[in-house]
Image (tube, rainbow over all chains, first blue to last red; front, side, top):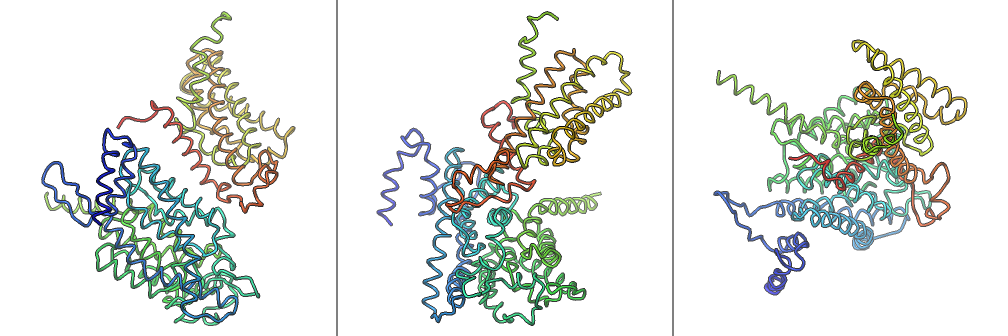
Length: 381
Length: 214
């Protein structure tokens, strides 16, 4: 560590004001604070700096994603071997999945961070940490077979139009990772839906790699007649986007988020509750197979759980007030199920529901704050 | 009016201002509806731009000629009648000569009447200036409208359908063999909004005086 510190110190004069590479200071700063706790001190007033800054917060989110990542990697391999009907062991599946997942992750980080660095240098502010999490989330919500250049295009779109246009990390209206997914979904629908993209090798030997939601949306079989059961959906032996399949892995991540205080339990709980109640309501109606699917199953399948835990809790694009968080979560759950059951073309309603509520989050907060001010004013008079 | 001041500094400015500093779409943010609706392909976008050019410049001249006899209480109605007449004429011409484009533009030709740019120019310029200046103002604003429309349509048709004026450019370049796919989102209206937004962004980077002070 000392060696690294010495190297950093020795090149520092190049980057500080007046140095040769003055313009590249944001890049230097990003590396330095990534490796070491920053030695920045407050310059005025008596503000205390918490050691848990944005970088440390983001590290916690990445930590909570690890169960999903490991399970997702294994599931890529496992689904592939069952698609080509070959025997496989745990290690084989893990290695196969790793080599499928790595390019996605590499492209996501390389492209996204390049754009972030370019903007930071041209604007002269420090590189923001937000992309560390976004870059990890993006490959987890993609089908395994998405072409890498499409991934790169969607990452550029998400970072530039979803984030930098509004002023960078902390200023964005929409969740950048979901912006990337929504862009791909509308731009190249044949690579983001259907029964070929979710499992590598699907299509060979007439193996269908459709997701549970896809199967239910085609309205040919009810949940009870599908080849998957409750346990498959709970543990995650199902086709789907890389990180979204395992409910258990997601819940482990949710617990880490909640106990470290990084993610809001209000949002997570109210999203699940909103989805569950809405699905119960549609059970009564039940005119298609998606409507009659049991309410608790709705929470396990598709991206519902992953979205509820890792996407809707994004502190930037979500609601800020405590009451607002509950309303925001309930409505995400509600809209996710509504979009699912009413529009078979978009069985994955979670993505659209979260993006929609991202737009409404400031409005919800506005009315909560407004109501609170009015209540207090009454007390004064 | 003597010939020497036909293209005086002022008239030149009437022509050039709306292209950049006072662009009707990117600066005044008028006429957005049509910019979103008919920019999927280049051909209808150009026909639309030409139609607006004819309607706006002729209406501006007519209103300018009548400006002293229009009672100010009913001036909006008079302006509407003039614009509506011209729009009907343009619509009939389009139907007679380019029927397929006219069908593609459908209601949007009729909706030129409600294009804010036209009413805005009649109110702000035609009612207060001479016919020659009004004509120049109409031309300038139409060009300002046209170049944005054509720029947006160029990118939407090229990236969304891989064609330009219906000619398969990307296919003839052999790009699809490399694994390229058309971007389906470029065909949807939201991407027109984003494209216009990106043009505004680039324009403001180049033209610092458009940026509001904080």
